[in-house]
Image (cartoon, rainbow, N blue to C red; front, side):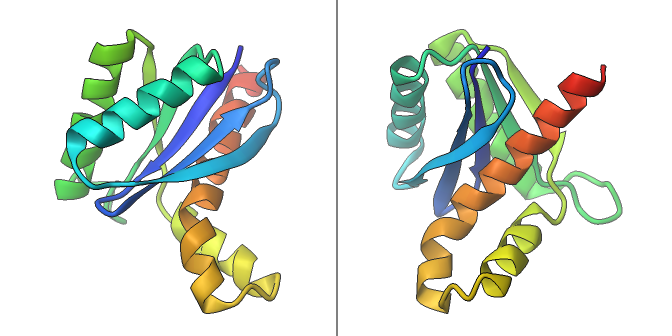
Length: 138
């Protein structure tokens, strides 16, 4: 089962996809968020192109576990994607996934300008890997 992983932000949406067996995650692209309609349509087209069966998005909880504006934004985007595509959506705790992605890129010697372009996609990979690891355990 192919799964799409998303790191949804107000400027960019990192996108990752699993292999057809749902074992590994690969970074796919970054969707620039111009407006809600264009972003959701772009994500829907990716779902169609890759025959995705489930969407997993990072849930940006505050460090104390509370829900803020960012959570509401993610829920709004994933709700619209669910309505358009009919695909089930799972939300997974993504606290520190962007920081983990940045640390990985820094340790790999990636320059600051290049980091901005791939950090969101790498965060989506981390979110998707977290989901896939949880599915394997259950």
